[in-house]
Length: 388
View 1 (cartoon, rainbow, N blue to C red):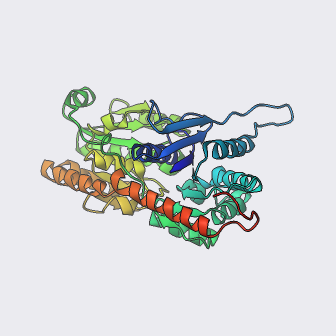
View 2: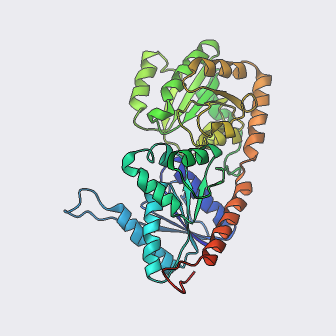
View 3: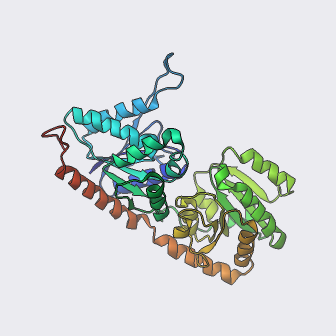
């Protein structure tokens, strides 16, 4: 198949999943075309069957902001026509599903029909989609998609409940690439971070309020009083300065490292003993899954799709959002006993293997075939004899 993938090319979960999906599909022989305003961060080298189409925008005196959506729609039309794409897979409802609908209508007027699969990742539903200024466009874009997937059962139900969507939504979980995310021997690295054998706790996020990074620090504060430990905070975002201030106020600067955005997070996870994710909202919890693949147990909230990833009492523990004391006690219960920690590590890896990319890729391939078959069977009435 020739597949166009539209995504945000950033460190966020949707962009990471879209890029890794494209790479995996390309390895299976599909021709993948990424269409976005910047090369995705995980598309860092040449890959066979991978193409990148840069969406260029220009500033005009008439516009306060460059009209990216219009440029993207034009680029989609161009790439579909001249690369002869079979299908578009857009990640994130706003603006990508809406733009794909516009491009599809333009193509229909030119005698070409391309099916669109939309994947919902979370904040396009839980945050952006609930904004009244976007809600009607989100609902319309989802309902006009030829296929819709969600990354968790929780997100699927949330979409139905909030928007009253009539489409069937197929759950295809996020995944992990075990060629990259696996526990490796980084003892020399661990010694540099924890020279006296301290336990290492880790958190990865975009440092927005809903990630509750302050809870991570408060959990660590309690753990550190009982067990000598270090905390690695990976990522960046609007709350970082507040978190640095909190560390100073609590006198934890010697034990907490702010590492900023990192490409090779698997090397940091390889030296970690525990991963902390106390999010207020989490459609799936990809960062937690990456930790589990590296044999790192997870202490998390029970928000959204996290219970579908982190099995309570087996791969880690779940707590109510904001229950810092409960999270700290659970963390201590794992970290204070080497045998218990080893058992949780083993269980985390076993659970992560359920989400191996090799198990998930066939689900996408089968769904693409299903969408293409349905599109051929229900040829658009507005264009008799349309080219499929």
